[in-house]
Image (cartoon, rainbow, N blue to C red; front, side):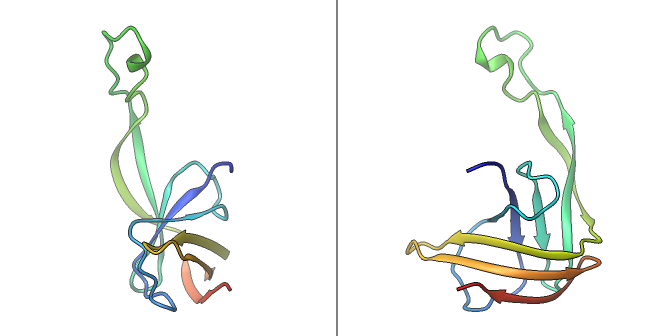
Length: 115
């Protein structure tokens, strides 16, 4: 399956899918389970963060690594993304939804459902 990023979409989507949470995409630059947001105005944001070691220094098993790359100081940063992002997910009835969004300098130009 490989790595992917998340899309949180606040913009109204064609077909009004009832998908809770985030969508997935393989079309963003890094594919490292990061989050992007399409806001209600159609602007694409990247959720930036810092990494902090919050692991237990006294642990001697696998717990020694738990929390070693905790995301802290999360903040949204406007992108200048140009291109198409395809994102997908399933609703509560297990219906697959897929959308293609075209951006220029981080601003949504169009979005359509992929059949």
